[in-house]
Amino acid sequence: MHVSTSEGSSPAWTSRFAFLMASIGFAVGLGNIWRFPYVTGENGGAAFVLVYLVCIFAIGVPILMAELMIGRRGRMTPPGSLRHVAKESGRSEHWQWVGVMNMSAAFLIMITYCVVAGWVLSYLYQAVFTGFVGVDAASATNTFDVLLSDAGGMVFWTLLALVFTGSIIYAGLQKGIERAVVVLMPVLFILMLGLVMYNMVVGGFKEAIDYLFTADFSKINADVMLAAIGQAFFSIGVAMAGMMTFGAYLPKEISIGKSVLIIIVADTLVALLAGLVIFPAVFNNGLDPAGGPGLIFQTLPVAFAQMPGGHLVSVLFFLLLSVAAITSMVGLIEPLTQWLEEKKEYSRHKSAMLILGTIASLSIFSMLGYNELSSYTIAGKDINGVVDYFSNQILLPLGGLHIAIFAGWVVDKNIAIEELDMGEGGLFKLWHILIRFLVPPAVFIVFVLGVS
Image 1 (tube, rainbow, N blue to C red):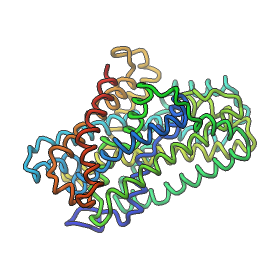
Image 2: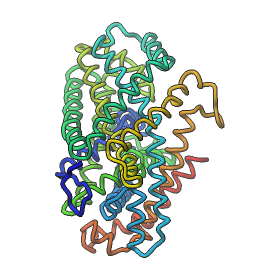
Image 3: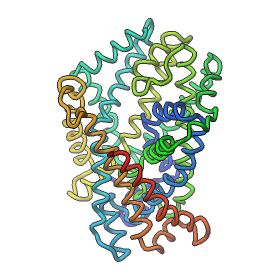
Image 4: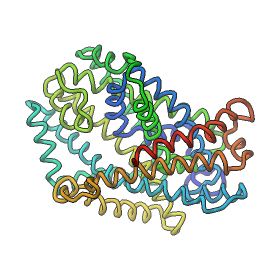
């Protein structure tokens, strides 16, 4: 694979724009688009958004900067980069296990995430050919139940999602990931803005604004604070190996601090815009805004059936979701593919095929967890619940905690100063204080409460 290089023979982004689009695409996933608006509405609207913004800047920004710093310094996969930076700092190479933890989380998340991405593609197909015409609450629920019970159908749509993602990974950094994200992410923003403007005309927009942005400070309590920390931590994709890998491709002249700021602002903007895409349709049609995971697949089709121009709107909405799903999957699969290239010295094509084949095979268990194996539980959780718990409640917080400790207490301070390129002034000192003293206890609390 011929790529331009910024240092030695390591592949590199050709532009800051490509890096930003890939990073934002990885951060903006299905969880952002339905979970953030729903959590915001339930936890005090604008009051929650303010708490969330404090958390994301105090916790999300420092960890994301640390990941990109470690990745760029090491120029390898997460385990390799951590090992290299630890060695350079005169510390134990065993820190590479944090990278293994991050990649394990990405692998487990992919097994269940690709199935949900398959659902989105299935609904995009339905939107194109039916526009959900005549759909009511009962038929929408039935359609979703049929999808979950049809293992064969789920296999088809899951494989299709993996083929789309795999073709991007297979082509490499510049010919695959860059070419895809510089087209897909602007398309995502355009679709989102178009749907927001449509909602401003059709109705339900004022109710959505009130739901999302009316500050109810009486709802702010310890649980809401934890929800904000959790949302801030998970929404930008830290401790999933993707950001550290993207950092390994980052040329020296690109500012990590400025890039992180853009990624955070774009990620939050998309989450808030998603609320203005989803909730006007919900309120305008008298539906339940607290639909949770079923909101996309069971509530919104009913809204599309009732709204003017609903056929086109449904196609655009599920196209938007498909883009968000695929770009997130690219960020989850790339570190695993790069690891095989580095560790086993396989070609990019062989590595991509092996990773995709393994994920596709294991995703069968996730699909069967919704039907044939739904009665099998461990500690009261079905197959998907167990995988989700282990990856999201254990591996991600532990991974983030160790990245913070590594960056704050293990990495030589001069390496951090050099890579972050902020001098030794107030901004660097603020980052160093946060990554050492605030982030570890905050993430530890999330971990303890998540497993209790």
